[in-house]
Length: 339
Image 1 (tube, rainbow, N blue to C red):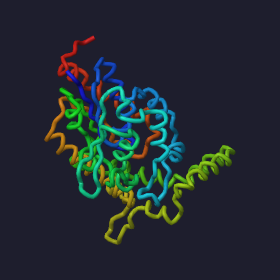
Image 2: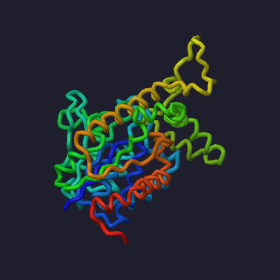
Image 3: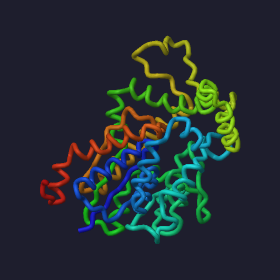
Image 4: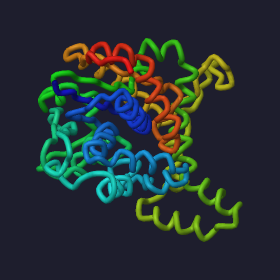
């Protein structure tokens, strides 16, 4: 009996996948094949390369300013961030060079921007496949691959259960990071969700000024200037660019932003990322209904912003907790004995 693991999309929330895998291993569950979408492809490629412990240590060491530096913030790359350093780290340290070198079968999912077709990677370069799978529209630039422009696989297949089955899995365990972003869930938590979305624009606003402030206070002005110099190649956001991170203007209709019953006014980035959350949740629900996994794991991630990659320890813990909550069900369905 082959067990497949389908790791879903979710930007920074994807570090929860690490905790899920660690908890499954603690239950003595052997994963035979892995498929991933977006951040799920990033974590999945490291897992299939036997490099998950190294990735776990690295992400838990990241501070907010290190995430700023790694992302490479700028507007002239077809997206708000280049992410090149993140993918360089994957290629150099956390993943095999090609699919042929992996310790277990692995697949990554992307989307053809112009045809809308699902694009599946099972051969070739690992980093190119993951880079395409992670190309969140508007945030990361599209990737040119074999004469096609590819974006995030979450547009068409956020939790690639079907790829696990194509790789030969008899039983599929799926990890859905979008459970807290279903419309019915958001309707009951509009204020909290608005504040969560605001974290994303706040992150980018801090990408320049905060670095200077942190290091000038500590006397490490040279370090700050070096970080900004490195990111200048990525066209760090200037004051004009930062205007797109400002919230929409409040008109004279009587709507007061100070009103506690009104969610924060969205910026362009917030409107985009919030829409992506809803889109992903809806597509996920549809795909999982049409091709349901045998076991579904859904971490509770409502409080985590999509760019909070520096909260890895908390995310990994929630990943573990999401498995622990249904451990008996998992053991029962896999016919595992307690102890």
